[in-house]
Image (cartoon, rainbow, N blue to C red; front, side):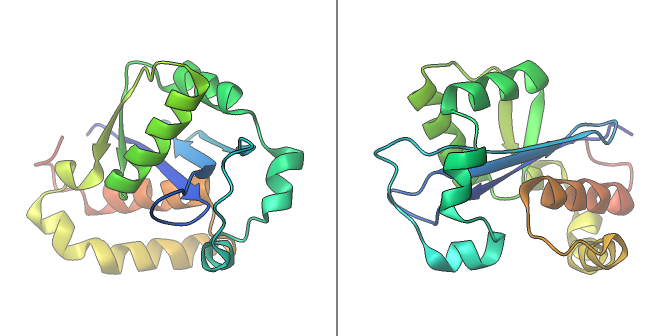
Length: 164
């Protein structure tokens, strides 16, 4: 079985004007990386409802976040040449596209929908298995690397041998 690389992106909100604020991913060997992103000056959209979900304060981004160039470089350094899977493909594609465009850096990995590698049995058991994984991991924060790890473990537990 090939263990997929999973990525998750937390954002300032949804829709027009939203931007990535945290990116986390988990590699096939289980190693995780997670970092905040310092917004550019013209990235002003902020949704307090999204903040309630991810628990990241805008002020923290300016203090602890990586620049868009540093973030893009780190992603390319660790993910170059890989296919990386996301459960929120359309949103994550948009946010990653914005990050790489604003950094002036070409993206060196391919983003695909996690659903593309799930078979029917995995889809059938996904929700219940994911809930069980979340309970077992007992993660209190909704953060990008934790979400990526939950997705990867759920994939592995539901794997039937017919995907990837």
